[in-house]
Length: 177
Image (tube, rainbow, N blue to C red):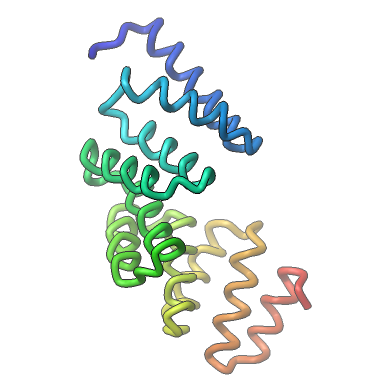
């Protein structure tokens, strides 16, 4: 459906309401916003992904995966959808092989995305591949130095490598020790 400028403005405002609701943890408003938008803009990978995020927060994981699939059908190179899928496969299904596949696809599309870098670092930490974990977490920290969780994960991964001084440094930076 071709949208005129007035409708585009209205839909953009509804999108912003949905995003604001996510930030305020008001997932009822958020899901209403994205459920409204998707039928009018079914070719918007961005809308599908935001709906996936809300479904994830509501514990509706199957619906979240369905929205990720829809986002990737619309745009197979939409890195944020690959990233969210990778996060979900690891966190919810403990399917680390598929998680890695999705995250590496996202990384190949957008290698400077802090969230992708962090998710790869966390995944490799879970898999006890601490050298790769540190590599990706250092890159994530360079992109998002205010993120304390990245520092905690760096400390944990350095500990896994047996580098106690580096581990203590990052944990101290995160305010943990």
